[in-house]
Image (cartoon, rainbow, N blue to C red):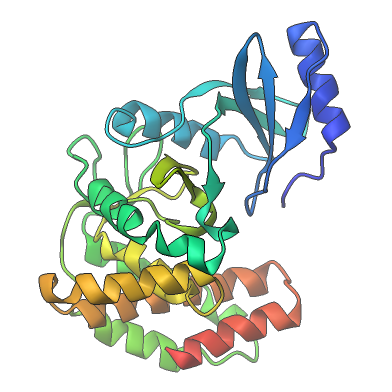
Length: 290
């Protein structure tokens, strides 16, 4: 659950840390963390707060591995904000998120976002063992991409009373046969509020906690999946559709397979977390569309 922490509480924490009053400004929040911008000792920083520091540690690893090639903010400090919450102080990068842009503004960043996607895909991942989401020790739990995809069937689907997921799982299983055993870097939540843009360029790539090794089209499929909800993802998906199919074998089958996986996981987690019925209905409707 996202921390419910006031700007005043963060300002008091930072003032105690630096021994002087600190001006703090709230930023657009992520799904799990709250974030604030501030200046101290002549430098601009971002402080994020979460109930779990593991995502912050993953961001530190991402900067160490890929920061020379990608605009990943540097992490300066991770610690305890309170008994319940951890904090992360990182480099402040200028810009707005893709999600915050108008439809016309998004158009100017479609090519840079596409170039960034390919740059992420091309990062070396030899130091990571296995497939799937890797931890801060650079270990991923699966021996192959197929094994990672198969792990979806290990979820307790029987616990979703009254929800018929068998047709979705059957189609997902069929489409898995088209997926390739490739070892690319995957951001895991690419686009929308995790990409910062400024002055016609990509200024930052945030939130690497879902970073994985496997087929980079998983990031592409995320844009297709959320294209029914976010304008920036709709525009990205259309751009990918114009540029990628001719270069990738079984492109449409792989994209639909990964969309089904994204949608099934979203549905499962939504029901497990007792989200509002309209949220569950949206995920079910999206699966039917796929």
